[in-house]
Image 1 (cartoon, rainbow, N blue to C red):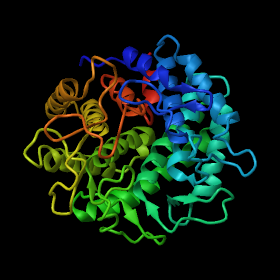
Image 2: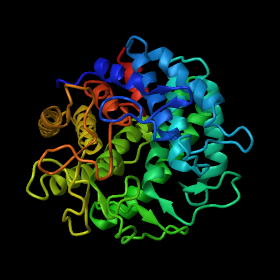
Image 3: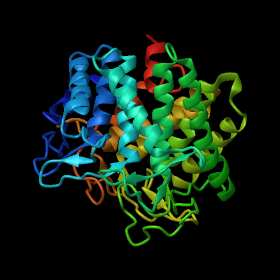
Length: 398
């Protein structure tokens, strides 16, 4: 690939602001009319932590800035605990969201593995909030969100927040395992419980069509957001990129559990990966993956999102590392070529975050280039051993 980690991190460094990391526009500059969002700040802290692990110049200092901002800045709610969703630009959002907090756990986990100052303290605080506020042990899943004071819970449950909860708890387990193996084992068990319900139960029984939206009692809502199908976080229908992400996470989880991993993790990873690859690719006659499909595998939102193809590449790379099969490698290389040819912006940097089906830059769901999380992980996973987290895979290959 022409895409490389060093130039990507140099581009992403421009997102640094006092409160954490801001939202970058197409020109690589922070958009002043956008608030500073916790999910972006946490994801960028994770990315720079990964950069520090591979020795990229300046990455350690940027990761340390992110950790300090998340621990001590305005995104952190010192009064009520946890993290606000956004601050600034007249768009403060005091919602305490599981999706957001999962990325703070991930940031703390990667910072801990990379030896970033304050990383372990950030991880411990974020993990405590996750376990006490969001994790529902009776359900084996995380609830969605609360108001600032934790008094009211949103009447919605989602697979997206739980997917990133699985990712972050696996990362936390890897970060804590050397000093606290008991907590690491508990976190991996929780990741397995959530994966079993969402993937092995609900997605398997729908022939590998992932349901995303649920009632508070975890009844699927297949028509949710039918009138807002291009929502950036809760789109209607089947989200192709999430099927690739879950397929990869099944393999990370199996690697983390080792000989205790149930056999269905590999079987379900295959089912998800092949369904996304076969039903998603060129579903509307244009190369690439539409953002979403309906329940009959017809495109709903045809826009091409950069994160979808990066997750396809990452899933293929991990699958190839586990199986050693030529099919996964061929798909990985095919999708890498697409990414460099259509999404890469060599003039400015990073990748365009959204394209039309014909390959023009779009902005129906994502304007600008807000973060480097999907791209950085895609670049770091190929050729490395499969572990519970990206940070652990990078560490194992040093």
